[in-house]
Image 1 (cartoon, rainbow, N blue to C red):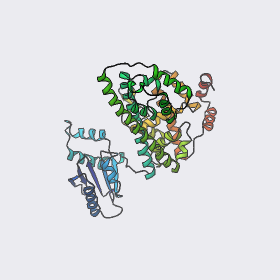
Image 2 (tube, rainbow, N blue to C red; image 1 turned 120 degrees about the horizontal axis):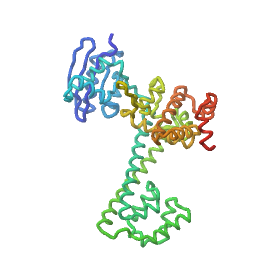
Image 3 (tube, rainbow, N blue to C red; image 1 turned 135 degrees about the vertical axis):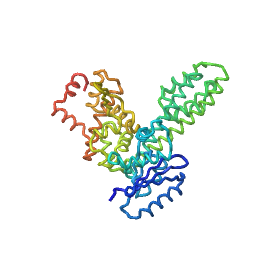
Length: 420
């Protein structure tokens, strides 16, 4: 009996999906097109369920998507087993039969189905994690994007203020706060600020939790002594409108980040694996939630730490051709997962003795900051994987003791280079 009742390849798009259904017993191929709508997808699922009614008859679905509207729609049908195919894999397979690289949606659907039929042993089915874990994963990714938006808005504000109101950059070193956003919304130019009474400014700063007397006095004194960079009304008027728009975007972004932080904290506190990741030095709720989202709860997902390191993009790629061997950056990987391990490794340098020693050791070898951080992330993946597999919280004391027992040269390096 065949492993699957049928193999379905779907080449998706925004408005319609080209499909190719292959029956393994007869080898027959059936091509059809469905609209991208909940009703059309539901009708397809009902038709296939009627065609293959037995509970043990599952349908393998190959699609060029690991996340998005189509895969979310297919999740609710238990008899579909989803096999996400990387776009590069499909492109290379297509080129094997079409060297001209001509792309055709119906043929792509057939190629996707054929990939499952011929190479299923090399493909891994996507098994959805628990709803709690997937919610945490999506929230952590959304938060990271908002942090990127916050940085972009801050950079645009900095560039704009340098053109007409540079004093703000001296008064407030960090523009990514509600204090600065409200300040610019209320006083978007030096001219609008000049006539403001001292008591008004003091009340404004206190309302935004800036209560240190020396800081308030210094800011007010600098405001009174400031001179305009330019008097060109065209520059000032247009910049005032733009800085108000950017300040509004900054306030909305900061509020969204705080809202996600509250939800992430609530979910983390209820998750069974949170304490495991929270035990990592310097992880805190943010990095612990990101690492938990990256690892998930399925302990069978990766067989070895090396497999996880390759999947995350932390492990480099070794290429060989003739007598030449070279090592390069891994291009294709889940960017958020690589980013999570990389950024946590950088943070751990401030909280873990051995992590700092290892980072300094790599730097002493001539590696750049990011290369040294990636090397440290590779070490952390092996540790995190072990803790995750055995459900054992991390212990800095136990790890340092294991380094001493193995006479690790890292401790010798730390003794001569890292102050205690």
